Image (cartoon, rainbow, N blue to C red; front, side, top):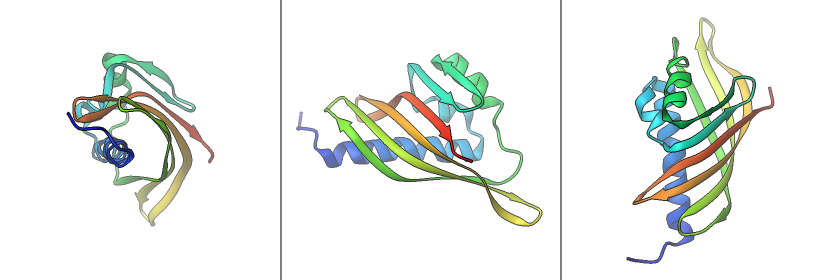
Length: 132
């Protein structure tokens, strides 16, 4: 087995975040939940904290979009990492398309801890703090 590099970790974390975001924007609840470990937590400011696949499935099933939306996640910084775990911070801009076009609905920051599961990285914890 080859040694895990910082670039490998960055790629794995960014891929997990992108998979989560695209699944969220298209309402693919099972795919959202698949980005989390079995006992992982998701804490969403103003919504609550949810642990485990059953709780995550329930909360994300209630967030299926009814209009076009985009979660734009950027400024991803790996704050610490080992071959099996990484912590990351990233910024969020959430856009929703309405009658007058696309508009910013909220801004936030994610604080994530991910664990390596084979070749994939899964969220152990995902915390979203809203700033708007």
